[in-house]
Amino acid sequence: MSSVDLIILGIIRNQSMSAYDLAELSGVYELIKVSKPAIYKNIRTLEKKGYLQGETHKAGNMPEKRMYSITETGRQRIKDLAVKSVQKPLSFHYDFNVFIFLIEQMPYEFAIDILGHLTQSIEINLEYLKSQREQHSGLSFPIDSLVRQHIMLNETLASWLDEFVTDYISKFNPDKMT
Image (cartoon, rainbow, N blue to C red; front, top):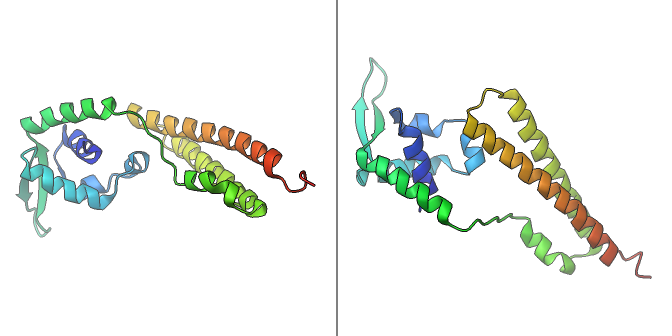
């Protein structure tokens, strides 16, 4: 299952686009974690498989531009990928979980320092998401909902991290152990 394919097909579904225009959609890929190189690579693959049809256009002195539109096979592929995407078990993998997993092997002061950085990182991310939502109040319903989802996840992570830090300090504070 390729979420990149689903994104590309879904966006191109209603309007032809070039690979460049698709890759330059700002803000969208931050929410769904897709890289620009993946967009270019997958567009070529989707065309080879018959899900997209490409046509080369030239306007005036501008360089040639390949515009992609979805085929009927591509429309069916959207449905198939959408079903597969919601049938998979949810998984949340955060890079910082490796540190959390190994925290008992870390020196206490170092661990407290890193936990402080993690708390700060979540707070910065939360502020950024809220400001983006406010700044772009005219976002489409799905994008606004995804921003809200990320805000809620960050708020939950912040709450969990507060509890974790409190528990960690109560169990491992060297001042308490004397």
